[in-house]
Length: 122
Image 1 (cartoon, rainbow, N blue to C red):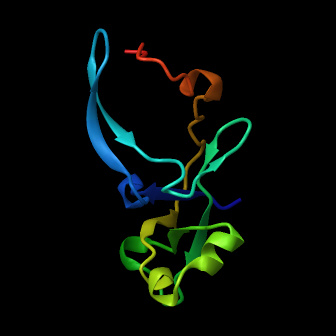
Image 2 (image 1 turned 60 degrees about the vertical axis):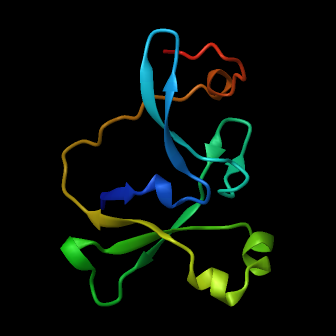
């Protein structure tokens, strides 16, 4: 089985920025990504960023095999001009790697993440 590693620059998403948010006990740097501006999909169990990996035909720099671009819903993509389509950002890259075991990601509880109050969890 092939294994790949991905590097994604979240600040390439439309409207994304870094800010500092002060909670009750801590201050943290955060990435803010507007859901509608970035064309993210809000599902029942999470907020999704659809992406596609496009394979390099002549090989990429630094051993990269693919570039990563955002994938848009058909209507959104069709509404873009050709100039807008050409300006779409490359979000990151992908390359194959060898590892014995992949690290497991922590599950996200979207209900907790979506609370709209000023009691920050930090």
